Length: 597
Image (tube, rainbow, N blue to C red; front, top):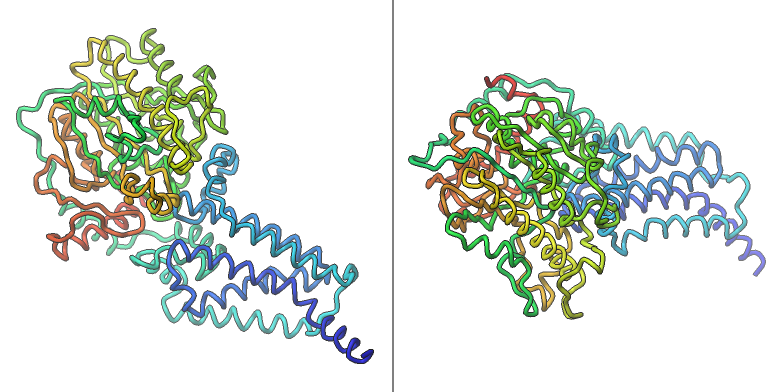
């Protein structure tokens, strides 16, 4: 018995030093499994995912190997836990790993923490749990002194070098890491497989290195050809003039809540009434096309007619590039003064720099509003108070003087996930049979609907209203990964949309219309040029006006799928649509719009 016990102790002492290394490797596999659950499990059939995970594990375990202290490995595991969980939370909200450029905006973390934290899932707790398990096993036998490894450092580093060499040879044969990664991001099914295949380290390196190459002559030719084949933006004959534009970008507003009654409560009574007016244009099926920049990407889509970068946020990477935008077109052709009204800080998503690049003259932001109605975990001004104070600023001449044409962009806040609002502000209530997230979302939508509706009532009292067009749209979808679960519930099935659609509403539109086909957010810009008589502006955007009878009812999603009726699209048209994301990415990345005069 004594001999067997001694042999067991020897075996245990040989295995125990490898536990921290195995713990780090487990975290990579766990991250890959959770990530692939939301994307595709294809990486699990690729040997690279295991090789890169093992190589990263060996590199991260070097401090532990050299110091022979468990504390070194624990520190690495804790940092990995935080980093990996943060990226999973980010993906569930924004459908990408955290871009390299976003790490520079770490100061804005508090602004987005509630939205991201709402996407926490039980499986995320397995990361700190695995760290705790390693600590328990290592201290179980009182391992507080230096550790004796059953293998030598020479063997350890030989394995590490062999793995790195194997991966390097494999990548070089296929054209190099950047080429392989770019091709993968252009794949319809594997575009999100970068983190599990090449780890988060590889993703960050790609974000960094991908900025370095210059535009090739072939790529330049592809941009030119794609743009030259765009349908012409044809002026609408005998269209009534609109000299002012109020553009309301409603946070996370989705189309399914419009014209909806739940438990005898109308969710958006004000907007529903406006939709029935003879001078309203309404398109309920606007596909969300934002990417890693989320809300700021929406401004790029609807105000600049560009699809977002495939990696990172343009507002952080290229805020000072040349952008031809709706505000600039209004100023150039209608002599407007351009305003941005937002309850956020100008540092959020680098909004201040973007606003200037987009042609905004006056920014009214967080410090310019009185905190009369704190909303959400971030304690920002609620939509009702926001619109009320905007009205005050208009009435006292701070905004929109009587002698000026204007473009006014208004960005709401209250629709931010997790859709929690003070009880005192709730004007609808739902029974327990309605899932909590669904009930919270509809409650906030009802609140925002009233705020917008009352503001529109004020606008109609102004003498300029007859020459004013009011645009209302959502900046992006709001339910993220809650959508599938809600659509499966008894209360949500048939009510919550399975698609990521936001509404596009134009009040006092010179052309009334009910557009039921699918369109993209990028099509809003081109359509507004049409409605405002700005067809002569130098940039008509990547999209196509819905006033064009030849426009197909399709749009490309950030995940590279084409949504809508593709039955009658030719192979050439499908290819062109798939190319649009790459073309727009290059236009932004290489500042190609500066050549348009």
